[in-house]
Length: 382
Image (tube, rainbow, N blue to C red; front, side, top):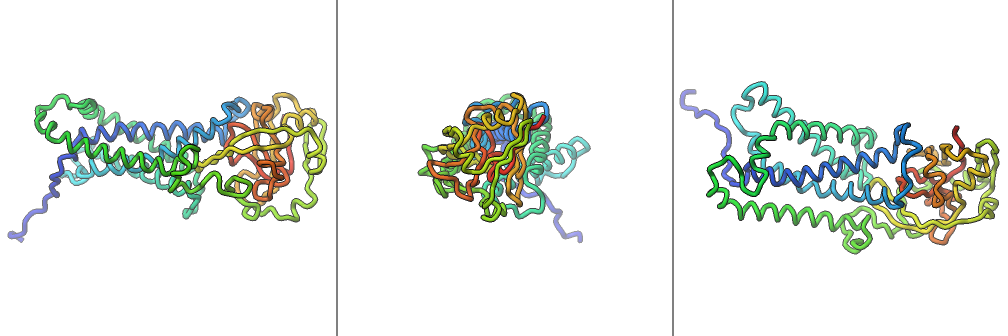
């Protein structure tokens, strides 16, 4: 026993495991997390508006949700190399000894543990959602939403604890230190590291953002959706078979509009009404989006025929028997927008089954999951 050497923590000789490199990377990672949080908040409100906002959400700009969700997903993907580089810079601190030097130090390490775990899990779940792979037993959206707040809270706590150190190393040259010659020696290596991380961020962005940003579509190598690939020129997230909408279910289809003056229409009667065209995007939560030409009956014309009040909210019911959002609600700002259609045609062709035949909703600045397909009933809510 007496001849055994005492264990000592490992030594890290790399010169870039330092506060200034961590601060430089942290600035970029913090901006990415803030962008993801704000755009995620907007996306959540548009998908599930709280009662006070349900009738006040704007239907313009037409591409609002498309841009928001594209930025959200692109920034989340870009955050992956930033987070990995940041963790590489600071991981030697895991091996500091003693592991806990007091209550304050213990709380600080606990907060860092929560921050790192929340960040890794949030990016992992988001990445799998982009490719629509859900190997877990829970619903993605509420967990992703809750984790966003855990991540935001733990990040704010971490910034508060580390504020003095961050302030000291925020500028190009650290303040309050006498090791300026060492900093000058390390600067080329630090610059190379930051340029390498920047190149990785740019690369993953360029090869995925094409699923939203049309000019970069030829470079869309890793994006799980190519917006121009699919039936009738658009991808399909949920097919008729997946939603369990059978041919028999639409054979004797009728549109029922429930309001002060209820009525029922066949597809032929609906097609005989004045038709209007709208060029609107389908923008999905996974980040892909595509513009398309839609033709159908304006929603506000259908509501006027039913005697609906101008400020009425509308409930839309789908034929689908499996999957979420079979029933959705539409505030007056969307329902009364002249671009909002109960669409019968897509890019000049009658909707096929996977795109919502006999009829589907299309509205500006609205998440794709709320552009209800296989519409069978429209209810005027008072």
